[in-house]
Image 1 (cartoon, rainbow, N blue to C red):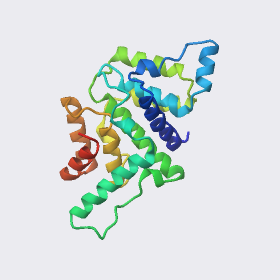
Image 2 (spheres, rainbow, N blue to C red):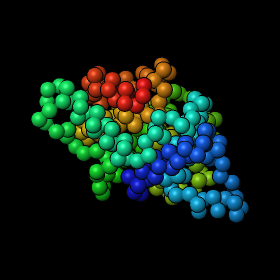
Image 3 (cartoon, one colour):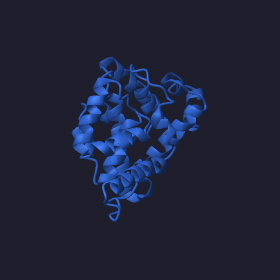
Image 4 (tube, rainbow, N blue to C red):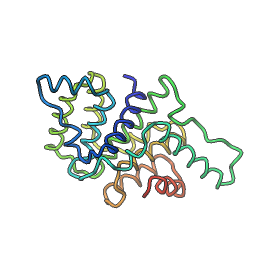
Length: 229
């Protein structure tokens, strides 16, 4: 499974859906259960678009999120990673440490297994953040899994998504995916783009994630400002 390509397509398809006026998960996830219409729809969608539908299911669950949320403003990994990198660099400069470049690289510049590991960490962060409001109960979980089964994803992708959906919310697991301060900034920014900071449960999740990622409070504030919070 090429996770970088999957996440790249997810961001692109999500942005396209928002631009086309898709507002809710019902409009994106309306894949027929069988017949020629189903085959035609699945053949016309890339894997990333299908995975985008899965994340749309999360964003459009009981919390009432819209497909025009913050994440969908960023149509590429380069945009997401570049914003996190620039924000981190500017923060570092403000600390009087301008001579030292930010460690690591933005996700958009990574290649091969390293890129897939970073992309998987970001995808896990997005899914976890979408669950942070606690709105996905057993009934909602079954609904989401039933929709996933209709998307026709390959087994590796399907297994990974189901595993992440079923996991108890654990910010320590998400923070463990950061192998550098740059990666930590990306993970936090990716989480911010699918979260409502005015919801106390989501705010608590973000605060704990920032602590576990080792992000300074003023860097957190800058990342939140960049995400429009």
